[in-house]
Length: 93
Image (tube, rainbow, N blue to C red; front, side):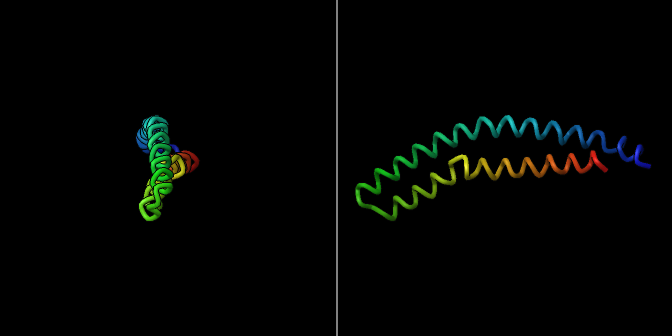
C-alpha cells in the first residue's frame, strides 16, 4: 500500500520540488531588490523626519520595514518553507 501511495505521489513531489526551486530563485532576486528599496525609503523617511513631518516619516519607516528583508521577503520565505515541509511530510509518509 505504501509503495502504491509513493508511486501516486511522485508527480506531486516533483511539482512541489520544482515549485520550491523556482520560488527560491525568485525570492533571492526579489529580496535584493526589496532590500535596496527599503534602504532608499528608510533614508527618505529620515530626511522627512529631519524636515519636521513626523507623521509622514513614520509612514515611510513602516513602508521601509515592509520592503526590507524582514518584511515581505521573510513572509515569502516562510511560505516556501511550509511548502517544503509539505513535500517532506509526503516523502516521509
